[in-house]
Image (cartoon, rainbow, N blue to C red):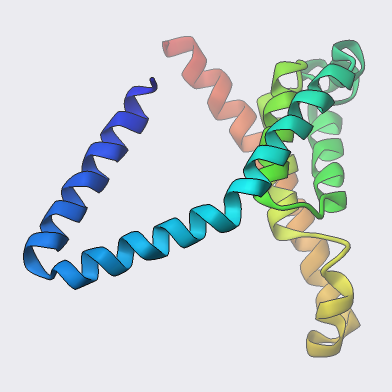
Length: 167
């Protein structure tokens, strides 16, 4: 088991113990809320894991490396950001897909651009923004968010490479 998970589990257990000692009804309500969230998200998590496994079998590592790999450079990072724009799924689908991309030799920067773009931009959200912000504001926000995704991917790639030399 992952050590980080053990630390988070221990901290959560300690938090529940302290909450229970101070106000047992708050701890009980927190536990009920947690169970409700788990019941709501568990089907998504299970289906998404199976989908990610299937996608990982379909991804051709050579193709992923060509379009999203380190050799693709900034163009690969930009392509990752563009793929993120198309993402409309939940985090339970997108993150396993991102891990599958990493496993198929996508560069870390392209995967960061993909996940960042997915969070900041989405074609599916644009029609919902137009009535509130107007078309010019929405399009400028969209372009800036896409550029931020690419810049974040480039910065992450640079930092990841620098950090990797110290490991």
